[in-house]
Amino acid sequence: MSDNPRPPAAYDDLKAMFINCTLKKTPEPSHTDLLMDVSGAIMEKQGVAVERVRFTDHAIAPGVYPDMTEHGWERDDWPKIWEKLKSADIFVIGTPIWLGQHSSECAKLIERLYAHSGQHNDQGQYIFYGKTGGCIITGNEDGIKHVAMSVLYSMQHVGFTIPPQADAGWIGEAGPGPSYGDELENGTRAGHDNDFTQRNTTFMTWNLLHFARLLKDAGGVPAYGNQRAGWAAGCRFDHPNPEYR
Image (cartoon, rainbow, N blue to C red):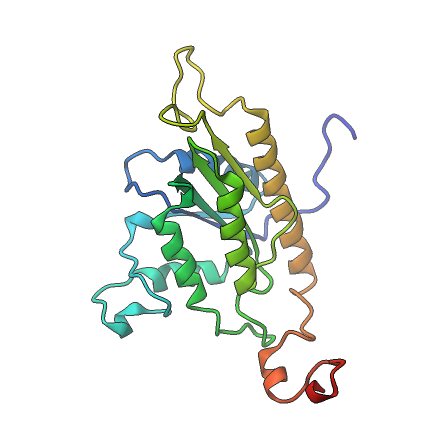
């Protein structure tokens, strides 16, 4: 590989959305934001249009319906966020670790994604087909892989394509201590020189870009064998069981 390899494709027609599920409201600094910005900056350098959302800055009602004002809630900002997410090619969820789990805001976000699981794209597939997904985790206790396992499973279950190595994170020493980006006594920032974190964040970002490029150029995931309407109409896609043909 040369010292200055060029990317294999252009990515400036792609859109990405990052949703940070910190428990903090703006303008309180978020460590998760800082690490998500590493990924976002790589994408922006390639011309990707990046949208950043902090979930706590919006009145998001809990629930599993697209608009919870139709189910008893006076206000729900989720439909506004959903309109932006619909056009995104790449979606990254960021969350801190609390008690070994993703945040309550992250759980709410996953539930709101699930609210659209019955909707379909122009090819009759589930609405998230053709989008790539990843996650970024921060904290000061163990649990990056555990949290990523839960978040990425949820994303692929509703239809996102999950590339290889689609998670990244940083945790300090177990127990109270500096979080990602905190200034240390020597003037450096916690995690900024952590090769494992910076490498995985970079790998995750480029894998999201590569797979988003592949999917967009291919017109999404091939629409055969995965259309709900086709199954309901009796087209069982060459199922080996005669009862399902």
